[in-house]
Image (cartoon, rainbow, N blue to C red; front, side, top):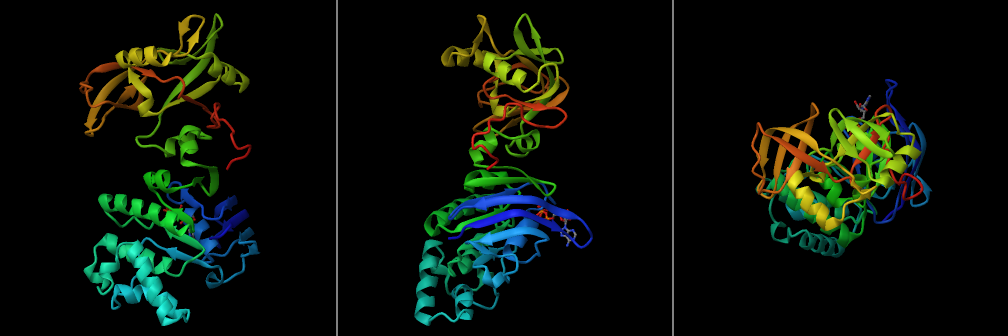
Length: 390
Ligand code: ATP
């Protein structure tokens, strides 16, 4: 286990390109940290700087209280698992797993114990005599992870370790990784494009864009309390719906106007938007597909949950969606179409009978809506729960 701290870390490549900017992150002992962000945002560069495979242009990297900027990769007490798991094809699984320990001069009995124990944990103990060519993709990946874990690294770096696997195997390996993390309590830094991996595995997610950290928080917080429109749009599948709106007030009632549609704001939100200077401004309304309900469902829901009231008037309202595509996914139905001319998606129960061509009235859950400044993208309803980002 290891503590890792990055202080104002920057990377400028020799061609002058600044790939990572002012990167500050404190990784706690035993934590599972995941870097996510679009292609080219600097995830791998940051990981490679931690590993010692890429020089740090400025800033400090601390590993277990030791300044690590100039330590050789081998002196950092870490191991790395890459996308293309490197196994020696002419060695058995046992030999592949034992190799790193042999190089470090461990005793044969110790090597044997560690290899067998790790193989058992990863459920590859029945494969120890096989060559890599006789293994499935998932088994190969487990051997690659085993070869690293057997060395008991205090810090494990993983760069898209599951990206070569098919969807089913990815799902299985995700569960395996979660178990491995629990059993080995290693500190893990992990890079992925896959937000499901990030949401299910991470203790904290680091969302990056163009070399800069956007938000560092738990998966739950990133999902429910995104700091800006970029994070809100990047995390969640299908993505959050965005709709340009203007916040207005009439007879003391605050509302959001989206084209022809009007949504009455509950008093708590109205106050926060006013305090944030959002009144009269161009804003972007954000609503996740699962936070929109059919009007008839909403009436039932409101009856049960005691929806927010204002001057005896119900908050909320309806948005009309022109349905274009229906995707039946078994457990749920996704309807894709347009709301006020913007692409939109809603997730409904499988009992929904709506077909393409229909127009349906949808009610947003006003407690879950987000509002972003149309210019800066900042979330006007962001709650700073930790006092700092992360
Ligand atoms: P991906 O998800 O596609 O792997 P990433 O977020 O891991 O992307 P990096 O590989 O860290 O991104 O690259 C960050 C940026 O730095 C990219 O714009 C990339 O083109 C640039 N870059 C990477 N290596 C070099 C290099 N050696 N010289 C110049 N620019 C580089």
